[in-house]
Every structure is written in structure tokens, then in C-alpha cells.
Picture 1 (cartoon, rainbow, N blue to C red):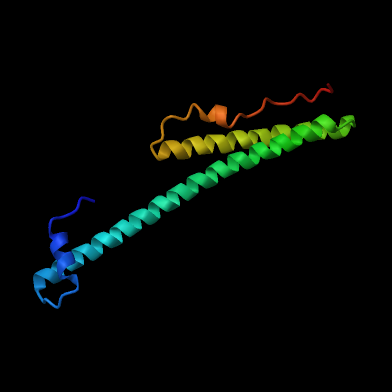
Picture 2 (cartoon, rainbow, N blue to C red):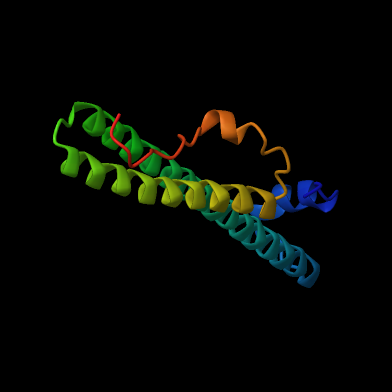
Length: 132
């Protein structure tokens, strides 16, 4: 918000005992403006936190995939390995949805450059159910 010229006068008179209905009106405008600014700041903080939570969901999903991938690589039992691959592929779809949701969230906030997100949050390829 641009500073109004009367704000300097108001600041000078704040600690004085000068009494005027005009001064009261100006004070009320400042209180309203400060309340609005506080609300705007609170809304922006909530938007930032919500965007952070969307990113956290992607990071959590990718971490789970990374852990499953390591477990699959160590697993020797074919049946257990197949079960882990199925779990991996399901979790992979969850990660794709989380990334899509992050993109949608960013676009809703006016952030249109989202192509780099695929590089920042790479979703691994599906795993084959066949034994390797």
C-alpha cells in the first residue's frame, strides 16, 4: 500500500493530546489498513505453507519409491520381489498424482513455469513384474 501524505501528520499527533474528529477518522483508516495488511500477510503465509505441504507430499512419495527400489534390488525371493514391484508401481502412481497436484497448486497461484519440476522431482519408470 502506498504511503498516504496524512500518515506523517498522524504519526506526529499520535502521542499528543490533540483532539479532533478528523484525527479520529484518520486513525480509524490506519487501523483498518493495518488490519487489512495483517490479514493479507496471514493469507500469504497460509498460501506459502499450503504450497510447502504440496511439495512435502511429492518429496515423501519419492523417498518411499527410493526406499522400495533399494528393497527390490536386495530381494532374492521371487514372490516377495513381485509383491514389492506391485507396491512400487502403486506408489509410483501416487507420486505422479502428488506431482500433478503440486503443478496444479502452483498454476493456481500464477506460477506458470512448471516444466522444470519434472527434473527436480523425477518420477521413476514403472517396474516390470518379470524377474530380472
